[in-house]
Each structure stands twice: as structure tokens, then as C-alpha cells.
Amino acid sequence: LSCYNCNIILCCIRGVRMLVRSPELRGCDTFVAYPPATPAGTVIFGKNSDRPVGEAQSVRRYPGTAGCSGDLTCTYIKIPRTEWTSEVLLSQIDWMWGAEMGANAHGVVIGNEAVWTREPMESEALLGMDLVRLGLERGRSSREALDVVTNLLEEHGQGGACAEDDPSFAYHNSFLIADFEEAWVLESAGRHWAAQRVASGCRNISNGLTIRTRFDLASKGLQEHAKTRGYWDGTTPFDFSRCFSDGPLTEEDPESRQVCGAKLMQKYGQDGAFDADAMMQILRHRESGICMQGGGFETTASMVTDLRENNAETRHWMTGRPHPCDHDFVLQESF
Image (cartoon, rainbow, N blue to C red):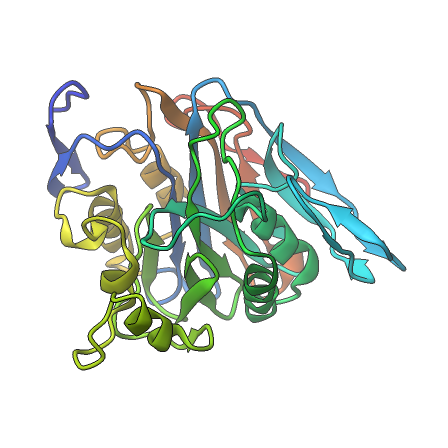
């Protein structure tokens, strides 16, 4: 039973019964699953990109480069080029340089999420989507891509309109960066950030900061900055999400897409059978709002990846069109 005109939705899938609030129609959902949730030798990644209705998003492939110099023009600013880049497969919004999600020839996948924080927005800088593409082009592992993104974030900042026709729509970003060995949840507030390593089980992010008191890496001076800004008293345990979130925490709301997505992952992975088909079913889940329809925003494109230790066996599926609940995932040509 569902009704997008109501505040409450009852959603059931494979025995999971959840009461969820009709979602705010601005968001994305990104997921990763490792053994023991998945079969041995398999890592599954997926993302729905939720964007303004009618905004075009295309599947595009860019070759690797070598011997480059000079400046690179991103969506709003120029940054120095690197000597080489990797071949990448992207789901790219047509009007911007960056990408909502993608993969590279080294078996790295990245998706980003909009998050709203207490840190002020900068003027035109790097978009989160620029950082997705830069991480894929310059990172040969998930950890290397993490370092690429955080270094660029600290040096150039993030900012600028994130919708072509709405200059007020701007946000900070979180990222899920994964390869066969490990994933990193990277959450940012301005030029400050924290990162949490994931190497087993399931993890998802959905438009809110989720890193609490446990994290593995962070920007230099993070806690001192939070204390100076009055976000933290310096005596209680440092809680990244609590300090920097602008609004309620999504994981504390039992009716949020964040919680609904986590429950679906847990259900599909409870017998170690979480596979690409299971990820596609989650991305098609309408009642929770994960497959978003109605209002000013919709799921405009989707991606699922089955990562393997031998990257030649890794497979990527993309839709390149709205509403995965109504369309097929298309297997992409291998790297």
C-alpha cells in the first residue's frame, strides 16, 4: 500500500515491513555490499541518481590519457591536469563536466550524495560530481581515489549551482568509493571531511551525514574547527554527523530512505545471496522513494556493478534513462 500524496507509506518487500515517510523529492541513494552479505568473490555496488525532472543524463566512456599538461576545465573552475588519467565509464549529466556515478578501468566505482551541513557554501568551485569523475580518472584503487578527492576538496573547495536552471540548489557532498578489496564512505562539510572504511557486510548513504564517533580518517584540524565554530563542546565524544549536520540525522529517522534502504540490504543479504539482481530490485523500490517519481525530482539514471577480484570479470549495468522501476539495466561493454 502506498500513496505519494500522503505523509506515511507502508512498504513491504520480501517480508520486510516498514513504515516510511513520503520522501523529500531531492536525493540519491548509494549502496555497497561485501561478503558475508554477498557470495564469496563478489562485491555489489549500486546507485540511483535523483535529479530535477527532465534533466538529461547519458552513459559516456572517456579513454585514458598520458603526457598531459596545462589546466583542466571542470564545470566551473580550472585545476591543474595530471600526467595521466584512467579510462572511465560515466553516467554524466549533460550540462556539467562531472558525473553522478561511474567506474574506471582499475575496478573503482564511485557515487555521490547531496548533503546539507552547517558549514557555509562557497561560490563556484568543484562540484561533487566533478570530484566523482576526478576520483575515477586519477585513482587506481578506492583508497587512492579517496586521497584524490580529499586533496582536491581541501585545495579547491566545493560549491556552485548543482542544477542548470536553479542557482539556489547547492550542497555539500558525501561519497561511496569502492573496489573489490574495500570501500570508503567519505562525508564532507565544506573543506572538512571524515571517512569510514567498509570491508564486510552492507553500507548505504542517502542525503545525510552518517559517520558518527567511529571514523578511520579525517581532515587535519577537524575537531578543533568544530570546537571553534561552536559545533562541539570539546568534552563529549566527537560525533561528526551530530556536529556538522544541518537538520535531523537521517539514520535516526525510522521513516527515512536511509533506514529503509539499510533494511532492504539486510534482508537481501541475510543468507549471503546479495547479488546484482538484488541491487536492481532495491533501486526499483518505489514505495520507499528509492525509485523516485512525482514532484520536481525523479530518478534520472541508475547503475549497478558486480566487482570481481579479476577486473576482467567485473560487470557494469546502467540505465541512462529515468525510472529503473520501468526500464531495463543495460550491460555495458567491459574495459
